[in-house]
Image 1 (cartoon, helix red, strand yellow):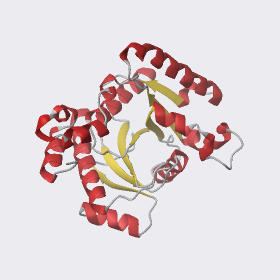
Image 2 (cartoon, helix red, strand yellow):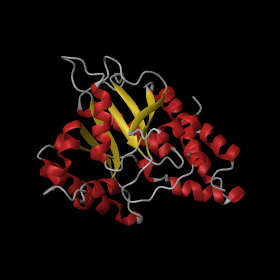
Image 3 (cartoon, rainbow, N blue to C red):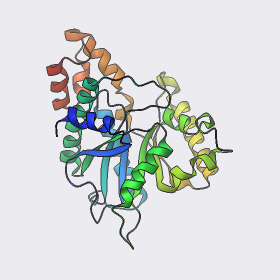
Image 4 (cartoon, rainbow, N blue to C red):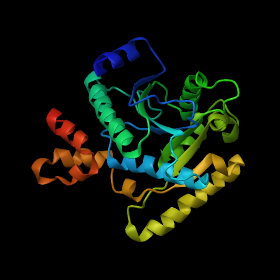
Length: 273
């Protein structure tokens, strides 16, 4: 079905979560980990890819799994049409362009990593609700005796700070109670944030690691928060790509920050100009 019609149907039917595209079957009998990257993908870039690749390497290392043995994992690129902090007024055309670019990224991920990769639309702002919706979908693939499929959300450091902010959970008495549904179903893989000042990088990274280790202690389970680092991701942001495109012929720095098919899509459709 055409992307536009898929999105219109999702909105019209007031659906909460739906897998709309997949390079191949996302969940198979051997799948036990679903790696989830939730982003606005405006546009998708090689920083996103770097996070996914690094998370796989780190997860295998922690689990003492050979790097080439990754068929137990699948990748889900999650596109939210609600945000806890922002009012969403995107047009259908904007949705279409972003989903089309994400579709190009799923094909690249499948080709480069050899893993099934899909796109999920979700209408929920909080990670607790997102995890519950995805868990309900995954439960349809869990037969009696089969181990539960783990969800692993890839998050930036700033997102984790918001995740643990009690203002989003007014009906809970404490953060452990508030986040229990999330961590019952999921783990989070947190990517550290580079400082804007290079001479402060080491101090900033140390500070972030200390904060995350304190969260591990708070949850009394360090396995629920994995600390990851992707230096390539530090150097790329969607906003800088959009700004570079706006600068036209004088600034081509963004070309190396996206895959070729997405670069061509942006140019062909005159996005961000």
